[in-house]
Length: 209
Image (cartoon, rainbow, N blue to C red; front, side, top):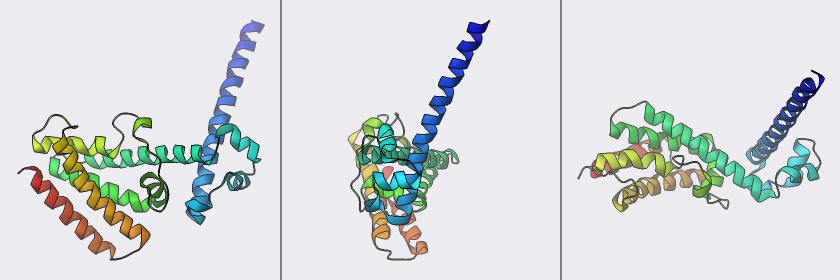
């Protein structure tokens, strides 16, 4: 009886330690994100993160070997958040044309609502990490957007060069417009959204030709 109770206590203790470690990881990433929102990516350092959450620097290094490891984890988090937003937008529509427009509008909204993540993910004013091989299957913008593009084109293979070309036509225009507005605010939001809708509609129309 006593040994079983001791075993349960040991398991409970291991679970608590695991939860505490996971919470510390979350705290470190949240602190890094907060610093960036206040001061920009160039201001981020291991020392600042430690000061923010009142840990010593060596404790931070127990969880992340260096700043680059934190940036990699934040980049992954950003891509998964973007995937969630795009999939959610896609699920609200049945017509392929509407799915495509909704996904790219969700992408646009993410870029400004989560500007710090977007800057890191796509290298806008900061070096980005290459994430495709580190993300779960189906969670990159290409994985999500290519499927309805391919279906509208009557192509089964989403890796087909024709699908890839159309995806990058969408992405280059939308990412370019996002980048212009993040780096230097140019036109009004209303005009930007009209440009965006016109571009999406024009490319979508070409998919059927």
